[in-house]
Length: 112
Image (cartoon, rainbow, N blue to C red; front, side, top):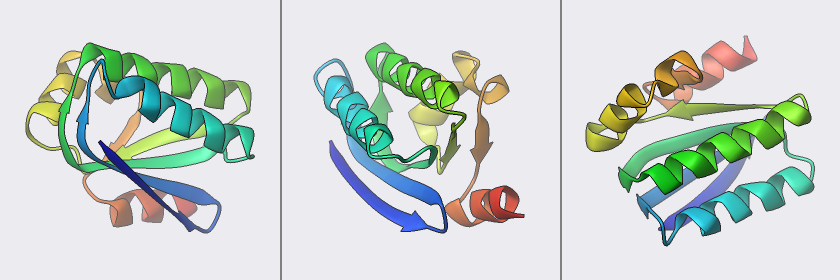
């Protein structure tokens, strides 16, 4: 798994590439936790290049969302495709999180 970040206005855009599974989920969660500890509280997670997410990955997403909620922050998603989109749908994440097709769509909605 590869994680890249960039900042747009007050939103941290995090792009994940590869797989978030039992092996990589702790690394993903720790990376996001470190960013929260540094004061970030609005995350746009782009999964456009994510090939797979397991239940461990879903747990890391929920744990991060809980930490952000405690800090009055939020987590937003974009670029879900294929099996990742299907897993988010089956897990009911579409009713829990704001999910957009593209970063641009998300940013327009969030920043307006």
